[in-house]
Length: 274
Image 1: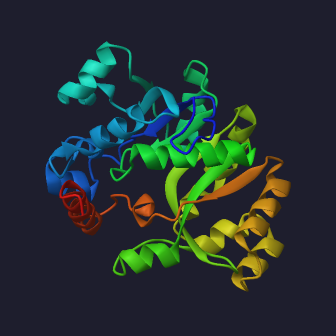
Image 2: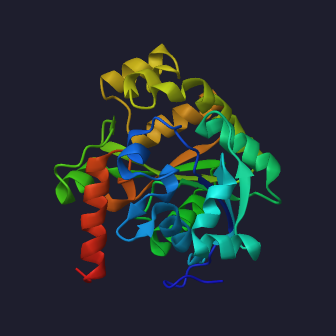
C-alpha cells in the first residue's frame, strides 16, 4: 500500500483506544450528565465515536480495540454497537492506570503489534494525522515512539490553550496521546511509566525518574529532544523516539470544560471548511 505522497505504508497497526473511566466523581461526566466520559457529546457526536471514525478511515490501522471498564455502555451508540457486532471493533478490559491497561490489553489482543495507542478524549484526531504519525513512527525504527507537538505551533494557533509542556533546549513540547509500539519490548516503557505516571503533570519529577543527571540537564535546558530520547533509550534499554507533529490540534484533548469549548469551536470551523 502506498500513501498519497507515494511513500510505502508500514504494516497495518492494531489500534488500542484507552477509554477508562475516572469514576463517578469525574467532574466532566457529572457536569454533562453522561454515564461515561468517553460518551460525552462533542459537537453532536459521542467523543469516542469521533476517535473510532478517524481510526477506521486510516490507511495504517487494521484491528481496533477499545480498552474500557464497562463495555456495555458502548452499545448506547448505534454505530459502535454495529461495529462490535460485526467484530470490526472489539473491547478489552481496562486496569487501574493507563500504562497497566496497555500492558493488560496487549496480552489480550490477537496479534497486537505493531500497536498504536491513543485515547478516547482525542476527538480532533483525523485519518491524515493517524497516517502521518504511524508512517513516521515506523520509519524511525524505534521500539516505542511518542507523538509530540511543538509549543510554538500550539500557542501560535491557540494562545489561550492550557497545555502541559516539557521544555528542552530546542523547544517545548506537549504530548499528543499517540504512541506506537513495534513489538513486546516496548512494554518495558509502559512498565516504567506505571511507576511514574502519577507525576505526568509535573515534568521535573517525570524527568527526575530517569536520574539526577537527567533531571539537572532538563532543569538547565541542556538537552535537545533528540538527546533526551537517546538518554531515555539507554536508561530503559528500549529504543524510543519522538515524532514531531507540527499540528496544534494534535495536542488538544478534552480534560476539562474549557478544553471541550475549544474543541467544539475547532470542529465548527472544520465543518465550515475553514
